Every structure is written in structure tokens, then in C-alpha cells.
Image 1 (cartoon, one colour):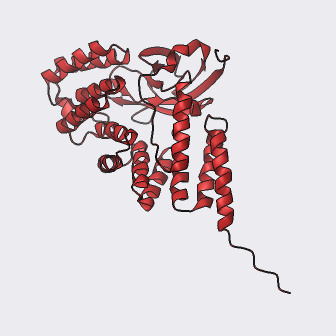
Image 2 (cartoon, rainbow, N blue to C red; image 1 turned 120 degrees about the vertical axis):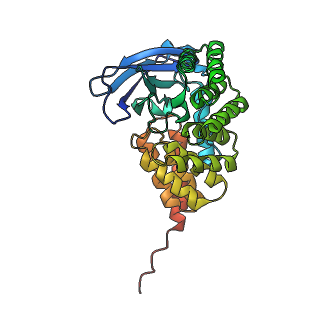
Image 3 (cartoon, helix red, strand yellow; image 1 turned 30 degrees about the vertical axis):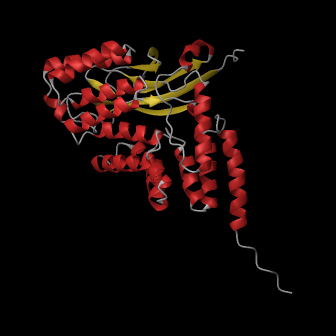
Length: 349
């Protein structure tokens, strides 16, 4: 039985690495399972909005990338994250990504899921490919021969179009022409990720690090893979290195680090990293950081604080697929907080 038609809307903004809007109107592209759709164009200030209908996008439910999973962050957070993954598989925007494109610039991406329906999805950044900018470009890659650069750009374009064999051929040519091409190794790892080959992806990301050990992005990619596989010690090591390299541009580094420290029973470190991730996420692109904080405070038996973060999540996602479960967890946590409250002093007779 097919589900009824339902429209959801999204808003957001595109910002250049310098902080201003793009110099021209740029397209907002939605990619799911190798299918790319142009959803909108930005306005003069870089903002955008669009709607998505379920029935118009039925083919998008079989997304090619793994859902973000930092489960085992405490029983409550684990359960809610698992529910999120289950709901995402039924969503027309499950694991879809938003990005933009502008010649000479690399776009960051925003992964969509049902918790972001009818909301501001945050900021898409455009970083110059011609110079080092916010860790998005490897220093070693600045010396790439023009022929290798052309093969890399062609391979990246084919990857975005879902032509995996063509992308692999071009990226391998780029690497053969310049073995220290860290960005090409990174994109090769992204290709293996989309093919659901995490082991091969890790090998390519490691090659990117070997080419340029100060290039942050492969550390972030590997941290995601290790978090999904629940290798928390590896996640901790990778995120600590990433945070050392760039402490300001990767809030997900703190997010994954907090999940790792929580599972390693380092609760104070988990709290510090989770609070840092929350403070950096100005656009609330990752509302599940509130569930992570709730898990941390529950593990510390600070139930009143845990309840505060459940409430904050519900403010951000009042009607999302996890909201009912979070409401139940909130009620249970509030009861535990009440049991901790000191009894009122007996009245004097």
C-alpha cells in the first residue's frame, strides 16, 4: 500500500568561504542514489527554499550512502538513533544530500533526514579550489599537474552523477599522474563509501593522509566509518587528531569524539566535546547532539540536565520520527530527576 502524498519544505543558505553570499545565483542540488535533481536557485543573499513531495520521489528511498549512526551512546540514544535509521529507510529523502556548485569552488554537503523536515537545514559552504581554505583543500594538492587536475575534476563530476565506473577510471588516472594527490584519494574513498565498501574507503582515506597528513577531511571520513562500526578507540584517536588540525570548522569532529568518549566511559571528556559540538552548531543541523548530551548526563546520573536536553531536542524537532520516543524517554528521566530531589523539611510542630 502506497503512502499518501505529503509535502515537506526546506530552507537554508549558501555562504562563500569568506563569509559572504555567492557572487551569482547558484543551484541547489539534491542527490539520492546517484540521481541528481536541481531543486532551487539561491537569492541575492544566498538563501534558498524548496519543497519535496513523497510520491514524486519514491525512487529516492534506496539511498547509496549509509545513514549517520553514532549509536551505543547510551541506551536511550542508541534506541533513538536506531529508530531514526529505520524511519530514514522509509523516507523519500532518506540519506539524500544537498549541495551546490560554482566553477572553481568545492561545495560542502548537508545530509537530509526526516528530522529535518519543514525546517532550516543550515549552511552550505563554497570553498575555493585554488587555495587552501578551511581545510577543504590539501596543501599537497596545490602542486598537482593540470592534466591530473582535469582528470580529478572529471572524476568528481562523474561521481556526483552516479557514474561510478567512469569516476573510478578518471580518479585513478589522476592518482597515477600525481600519487600525492590527496584530494583524489579522498574522492576515491568517497566512491568506495557509496559502493558500500568501507574497508576500501578507509584504505583510500589513509592514502590521502599519507599524501598530506595535515588534510582534515580524510580524518573526518574515517571517524564516521569507525563510529558506525563502533570502534570507539579508533574514533577517539581520529577525532583528536582532526580537532588538533582544525578546532573550529568541524563540529562533527566533536560530536563523534563525544560519542567515543561516552562509550569509553570517559564521561567528563564526553560532556566537554558534546557541549562544544552543540555550541558550534549554530544552525542546529545536528539536533541529535541534544540526545547525545542527554545520554551523557544520564550516564552521569544528572537526570535534570538530561531532561533539559530532551526538551531542547523536542523544541528543535517537535514532530519528527523520534519525537514520540523522546517524549517517553523525557517522562522517564523526569521521574528519575524527581527521585533525586531532596525531600522538603518537615514542618515544625
